[in-house]
Image: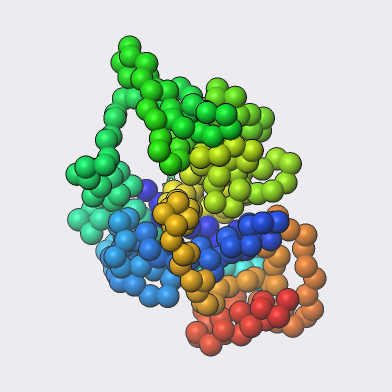
Length: 309
Ligand SMILES: Cc1cc2nc3c(=O)[nH]c(=O)nc-3n(C[C@H](O)[C@H](O)[C@H](O)COP(=O)(O)OP(=O)(O)OC[C@H]3O[C@@H](n4cnc5c(N)ncnc54)[C@H](O)[C@@H]3O)c2cc1C
């Protein structure tokens, strides 16, 4: 499975929405790191002791691999694309845009690293956990406005389970809004592969900045449906990140501290979904310099420039 986090500006775009200030890239990065064990080791962008194993393709493993990346870089140069795509050594690091090796959610032994293996397998022996497979959630049960359980189907049996604290709904971007609607909580939004129970505080938002469903108590949605806007990449890694981040809130833990790392901003681009912010020729010059691989001092300058907005 592709391990692609999306662009740093995706998350900065989330954080520009009212009430979602704590979802910026620098707030989310500690949770990407927390969830991850990367085969080639940790750095400012990657973790080394998380439940999800991530493997980076090695160019030396197959000559075609390096050739394909180089062909992309050369094609871009030949096309004369001014702020085109250079080689990038880490699509989940300082710079997403460019040609480079794609990380995969795979163990060092070449096995698929799913969240079932990474998280559930380690928790299944806990005395306070019961896993019921082949069960279909029908609806959330309420006592007044408070969610206090679920009704589910198991074989031909209809079963109810009650919650002491909260109900966490993780049915995915299609099923979570369906289950909410069957339970009398209508998100009334159109379906997308994500964002169907979006976080926020506007009239279309379904949950708040901790996944709590607006207007009721004791009920959270924690899956891809709560993204306020789809990221520019695959959705598995962002979903794991947001679940890790909300898990800290559920457990009453302080959020991991925001990290101060540089990240690439092409040509002074605005965060996604926000109105474009104008910048001067200074930004253009910065972007041009970054069309070829740059030493690490340049990103620092980029960040300072961005912080000055
Ligand atoms: C074919 C395919 C390939 C993909 N490849 C990639 C990739 O390479 N990289 C990547 O990052 N992303 C990939 N994705 C996307 C990624 O799988 C999802 O974005 C991610 O799994 C979303 O996580 P989630 O927790 O929101 O939902 P899900 O992982 O879908 O989890 C929802 C769970 O709820 C269960 N469920 C639903 N309804 C009910 C119900 N009524 N009762 C009980 N349980 C229910 C489902 O069975 C499922 O297990 C792919 C998706 C597909 C379909």
